[in-house]
Image (tube, rainbow, N blue to C red; front, top):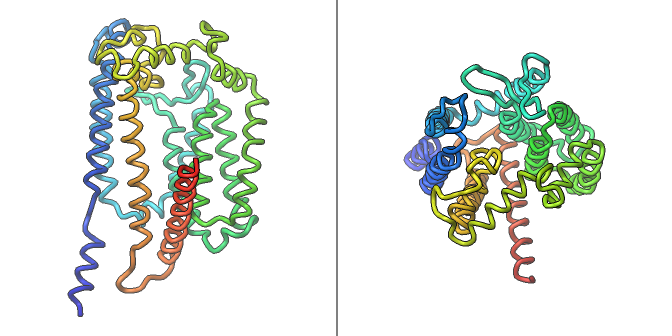
Length: 352
């Protein structure tokens, strides 16, 4: 009688991983390293601040990858229950960093945006950490508040108040993109966590209005949207970056001009090794290269949902109480809603 129980416990406690998912991540890391080097050679050679070293960004990217792999390995060894416990504290620390970056003399202003903290050897962007901390906090919130997720006052409004505070700090930098990502993450997790369907529908109805007001209330954001919609109206002004990115995509055609042969990275396309790296990939590796990158990221998303569904089927061999019961209910609802969304997309695809 004890043998099946012990085997179940071993399966639960043993560290396991998705080998295919790991290979996809390694492929993305390797491809990213190569393309960062390719996109940054011209800029690094022309930049006195980096000593005209063509391999400067290659070495820096390799160091960051190594740090990330070590951090990921350490994270993998820590039980998820511990991460749930510290999620609120990490979220509060993220809020503190968002406040800190707005203080003159502490936050670093780059290209008109005060988004960075100087750590001497590198710059830290708190909004990037906040994306992770927000995902962890909202997940913990959905688990702890699962019995109240049908209530507007007890389940919905507290999270809205927190997200409004985060949004206010991010828009002060300004970083509308990070706020949009965090809002999307929070809304998605609340939906998977079992928020009342009527509340969720009302939220989705109000979302376009809120986005319109945010864009209309800021000339800076309005100009960004206009520049995005028609970059050719001002190709030497607000549409400069996007127009050159489109040129890079056009030059790449199906299979690209060849690795290292990009013209746009030769100081034409700003931030070619960061914000517009995909444009360099499109130019050098073509449409096929872009589809490959997108496909790898789609696979990560699919496996993330798959791992979540496997977690939803998890059963305790001794019986579970407390927060774990909420985790089981959270996983069950997430599983149902993911399957419903997938079925809807499949029906629409076939009907089209």
